[in-house]
Image (cartoon, rainbow, N blue to C red; front, side, top):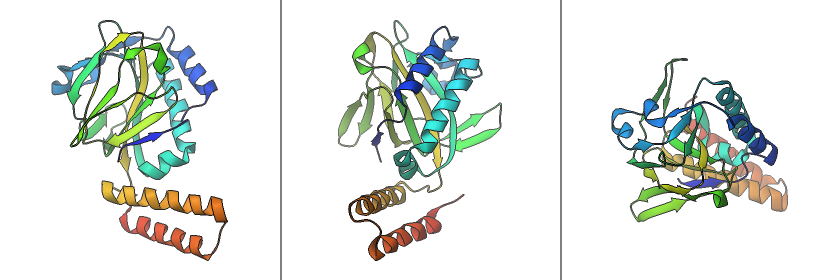
Length: 227
């Protein structure tokens, strides 16, 4: 399931992240890529263990924790530590690729199955040209370029690329999620059921029908989830 997630970050959080990024230390993105991706990856990445990156990571993870749509759509078991990348100048694109199935963090020993990929946009889309996240789907390519503070989640199996940035600077945070519910069809069903229950409760309040549907949701989650 590909899904935009709006307003993940507040205006204050975005401003704080931009201050942290100013003057931060960057490295070539290909240094952290696999053998195949390194041939296609031409961007910059904030040093993962820098003070700026550690502070940004806490802001982003806190924002994701409080966002009901992100939780409902991903049902996260583990989130692989967020990174920040930048596309500008000569380091301006990432060719078509599929993310690694397993991500490993040497400093923690954590291994995460990449059920879901996530890009959180940090730059105003009017401040740069190009830089669309292009998804290659069976029905054709889809280009995504969201406002700062919004995210897109999509299956880790998706072939995708970042189009060349021809003006300005594209700044984004990216991460991977291992879901408690491995099957994408089951996750989608749970997400749609959860959003329906929320809409019914907002419109009619709690009643016997909403309680019954909530019970069905949790019974399905109990059946399918691996914690």
